[in-house]
Amino acid sequence: MSDNFDNFNIKDDILRGIYSYGFEKPSSIQNKSIPKILEGKDIIAQAQSGTGKTGAFTIGTLCKIDPNLDETQILIIVPTHELAYQVYTVFKEISNYTNISLMKVLGGTNISMCIEELKKNPKIVIGTPGRILDMINRNSLITSELKTLVLDEADEMLSYGFKDNIYHIIQRMPKEAQICLFSATLPDDILELTDKFMNEPEKILIKNEELTLEGIQQFYICVQKSEWKYDIITDLYDIINVNQCIIYINSKNRISEIYDKLLNDNFPVSYINSDRTSEDRKIIMEDFRSGKIRILLSTDLLSRGIDIQQLSLVINYDLPKEKETYIHRIGRSGRYGRKGIAINLLRNDEIEYLKHIESYYDTKINEMPADISEYLN
Ligand code: ADP
Ligand code: MG
Image (tube, rainbow, N blue to C red):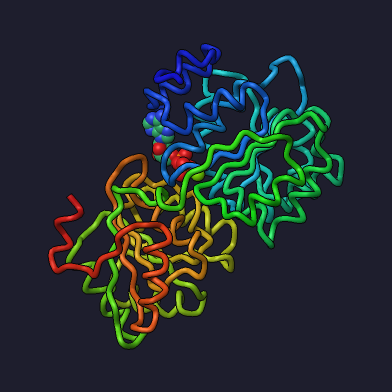
């Protein structure tokens, strides 16, 4: 164990990047996983939301790059464009004092430009599974010298929508390449799958009961009719006057309905879902990060990975369908030990489901008190 990045045997130029990015000491997951990545072991690494998993695989894999080998050596796969941009930025910052080349490979972007850029053999590729597999199949993305594959949000990457693409990508990797899985949630059925393609992985796991963060206070508000939720949202905003919040809504139609109403009531609001163009999504995220947009309505597209430090409030307008999603959604606030609040709006008949989530994670979700604003300080 080390409580200092200097003890990891990290090259000076990367160490300099780590410190100038503002990291002083490694977090617990960084301490546990970076040495394993350096050893070349397969790992399955679980840690609570906001505890620095990105830093762990960014630092670990940057250290593995052979600067004299002009081939793609590291492949990082994430579920959404938004997360790919964010992870790319972290790599860019931490590798700032090196010459290590990076590239994003994302669906919905120009294919011939993607092929052109891959000809330069970027040492690290960060992207989404569909386009990455496409580039591998076209022999544009060369996998023969890959040292490490990282699946961020691994349980999502190995679930229904992405699994086949991931398996195909793994089949194209060298046998001795290392596979690293990272996520806050790793349900048993997904862990079982890993036997198929991992080689005696080192497992860093945490119990369900330890998954929620103490810094995030969770509340619920019960309504008799779903239609009343809108008024609660507007009331809440007046009371808490928070910096920024995400409101999760399960359906795209309901998002547009609520968006129109909030806009009409002059709220600094925008929305994001998979129907928006890649370009729109990029602009909205930039505006949300800069604070120009204060309230963002979203489907589960943004339930995972997004890291915005000043985001202190998450509202579940609808409860998520999966209990893992609940952990990811509320984990958008309370980043790296900060405080956060999660408020769940429910109909009376959903209280049982919420109680189930509460006991599964051994956490506390209380009925919302009147003096909520005090919790934000
Ligand atoms: P996770 O993927 O575990 O949810 P992230 O990797 O997105 O978490 O990190 C959450 C936040 O913590 C980010 O804002 C990141 O910059 C910050 N962070 C990560 N590691 C450190 C560190 N060692 N020191 C200080 N801040 C850190
Ligand atoms: Mg993450």
